[in-house]
Image (cartoon, rainbow, N blue to C red):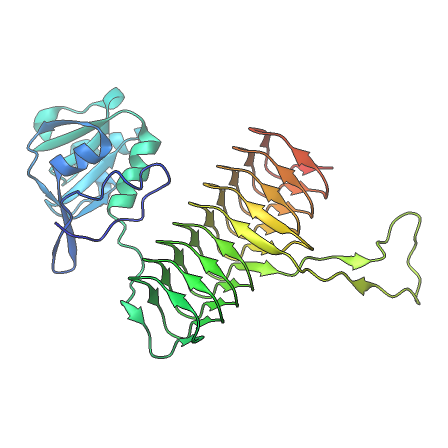
Length: 330
C-alpha cells in the first residue's frame, strides 16, 4: 500500500486514498479489481491483472497497459490492441473473450477524470525545501511541504501541509496557501492573497497583480487632451481563491481596489484568462482560454464561458448561464 495520494478531481478527493497503489521501480502498479472499485464499475474476468499505465488501444505495448475505449473512436481499435485489459462503456461492449479483464463503466467523462487522476503522479519534486529557495524566517510551512529551486516566499506567509511549490515561484508577504496545493514553476502570487485547499495553479500565472484603474476615466464627456494627467488608482485589496480551484498557465487575476477579487470553490480557469479587479466568480464555473473579464463583474455559480469571450465591467451574469466562445457581453 503506497501513501501517495493522486491529485483527484473535485468530488473524488477522498475516494481512493486506501487503494493498492504500489511501485515497482519507477512504475506504478494497480490491480484491475482496484481500478474497477475506484470507478464503481463492473469487472468481467481477472481482477488481479497488474496495470502500470492507461493508454489509447492503439498505443498499448505491454501486458500491463490498460486500454481506455470509452468513446467510439477508440472502441473500433479494440480488436487489434495488444492490451490484455480494457475499460469500456456498457453501451459499446466488445467480445469479453478477447480480454483477460474488462472494466465496464457508465458515465464516460467521470470515469476518465478518475482514471487519469489515479495514474497521474504529478511533476517530479523533492521533499522539503531546496537549498536555493529563499524563505522568510517567519514563514510557516506545514508538514510535507515541498519548495523547489529558486522559489521565494515572503514574510508572514503560511503554506498548508502537503502543498508543492515548484521552481522559480514567488510568493509575497502575508499569503495563505491551503493544504495539498500544487503551484507550478514561474507562478507569481502577490501580497496577502488567500488560496484554499487542493488548488492547482499552472506555470506563469499571476495572482494578485494591481488592477487597471486610473482617474479620471475617459469617456464621451471627457475627450482626450494632451495636458490630461491620468492618476493611478492603487489596488489595496486582495484575491481570495476557494478550494479545489484550478488556474491555467499565463492567467492573470487582479487584486481588488479595497476589498477582494473572489474565485469560488471548484471553479476551473483555462490558460491566458484575464480577470479584472473586484470581480466575483461563483462556484464550479468553467472559464475557457483567452476570456477577458473586466472589473467589478459578478458571475454566479456553474457558469460556462467559452473561449475568447469578453465581458465588460459592472455586468452581472446569473447562475448557470452559458456564454458562447468569442461572445461579447456589454
